[in-house]
Length: 123
Figure 1: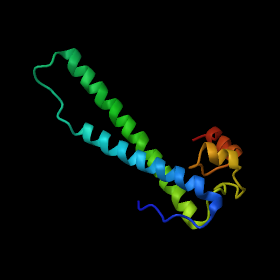
Figure 2: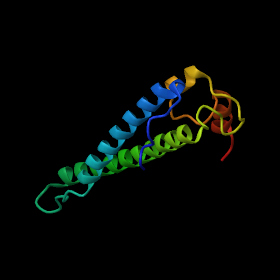
Figure 3: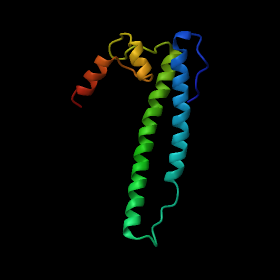
Figure 4: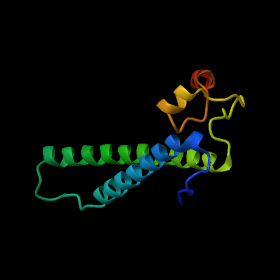
């Protein structure tokens, strides 16, 4: 995703800087971890314990990569909301998200109450 140009609204300057910093860090981590998953995996010559450890490390790395992809998506969507003027507004209720919550979770799309309702809802 192309990161939008700095915003004219000083109200969101900290959030924009924080999100772009997170975005850059997540992109770098994704590149590094994706490259590590493509490294050849020793199949011959290693004993069963080494092989199993290698398989577990690869599984953990893939799980971390999936988590980073999810976080990257959330940050990109938050940057898009900033650009579109929808940042800081709960996607469920339309209410303003409190400043303290946005400082703690600058990518959040929901007020705390809405997030808790969503987490408690049956899937």
